Length: 453
Ligand code: 13P
Image 1: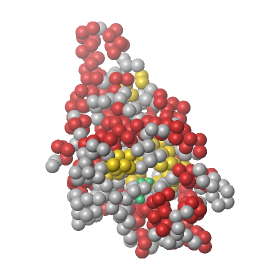
Image 2: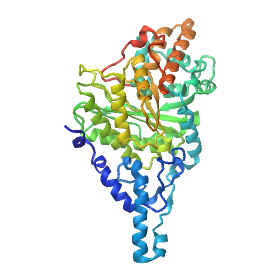
Image 3: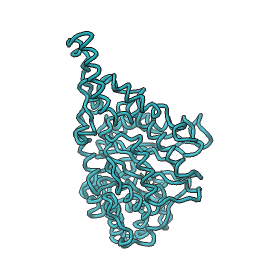
Image 4: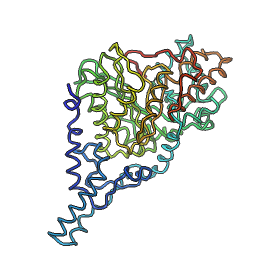
């Protein structure tokens, strides 16, 4: 199957979109990204295109060129037919795309800035209590609230971690938890220069009407109330993870993933939380890297179309994708340059440059592999802050060093700092595995089929 045949109609119309926007374009629209990357957040969207249901989000990147030519043609036509008065009537009223989150706009842009500073990424530590328990059990530690508390305060309390991790994604238990010294975990994070974030989806369940084994992600029903509470508790960004498999996925699974992510993002913004959009394309399967790329483009394009439809402000969004790789059961592997070129090609095709940060998940890669792949991504030009939001690929060596013993906390924190520093270098394209002094555990793959959070 070709890429084109499986991609959404919206993407296939990208070329048409340029032409049609050329004739719909308002006189006042300027190219938001080609000339003014930094100011894009302040460029109003024209009213006629708010919720551009028939346009693909990818068209936004092409808007500038089309708008200039189109508006000139429109003006010339109208001037000839109706005179200059009609030109004034054709001016659209500016639409404020921030209206749903106006009171939080400045703060959300500040949050984005803090999370995407050069050399910074995110520490994902939002495993559900069940998944966190499995990880603790793997080093012989019982899954109790107290043991989760000690482990999570070890991570968050790592001195200087904030130099490399601008934020940490927490599970609800941690957001409302105190440390063993009675300080709130949120305070501990902030003291360390780490912005607290929160996982807000309530997990995956079977997708009725989808193909056998497909899932969808729940959590929308009470999300508005919950996000308001999370904001009050100190969270400033959020995460919602849903999954799509590469082979044999239904269109319903892709559309449902896009719908859930876009609604979630809009609601989060209205409560002052910067949404991390995480459409994880599963590593499970025998697919090739090209098949994987096809599903990425199909899914991301639907996600950003839904974001446009639902009025999500992209300047206050982060994307958390997996990397484009061959399937875990394909018997193939791809070197970092190949992973990077395929992943960036997909991103450039369908992810608008208005999105400030692409924060990858590690998806079961070893710590070193995830760092090397991130580094390769940052050796090629791109319009984003490309960084990490790893859980397993930041925690593995640290967890094994910690092993649930208080006397190991300092050594474990030193390991976490080393890993975060390595990824910080990779964010700048400066990580060199040849000179890095890596532990043997950093080379361990952590892939688990049907992994759940
Ligand atoms: P991994 O890096 O372990 O894949 O986890 C990513 C994630 O989504 C946790 O927030």
